[in-house]
Image (cartoon, rainbow, N blue to C red; front, side, top):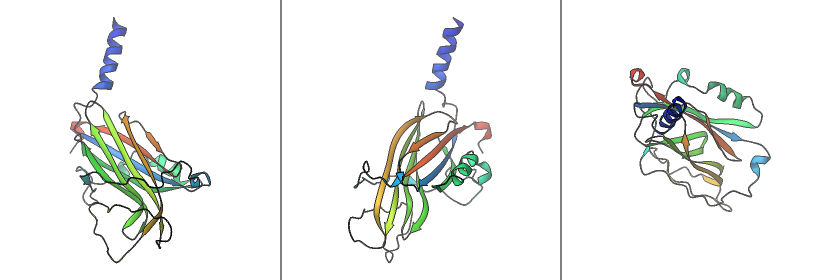
Length: 213
């Protein structure tokens, strides 16, 4: 009987682990692969369907980071060791390392990183976290290789939400590869979203109400 109850309790903890939580710390490391294997294009969609969610939140960079959708300072990051490992690995480059707090309601956050070219960045897209009876992550990001001319095929990039468009600056993506994936996530567990050209490390940690300011 005790064994059956333990199994039942464990099942409940997986199905309903998030009801009492009000805030979640989200942390993302995005990195590029700059190796010969990353240049293979056989499985890439040459015309990806690039779009941002209708409501995309832009993280704020001012403040202490204790409010929702403000970037957290580096001393509050959970993945510093993983970031250092990537930086020290040959053929890999960190594009962005960000963390923030957000409430349990589903929300999409703008993700950009890498080098900036005109109105755009090497890495663009969004990360959506939904909280019902479980954590659900929706990754929709793309990696751009830019060109200063329109010779040959180019990819039309959507305008980045919340940014002012410089009409005098023209940039074109000669190659854009997209990573789209939806996944259930466990609390405080490191998740890896993979593409031959780039990848993401993601961790989501519930913040107990007593610790949320």
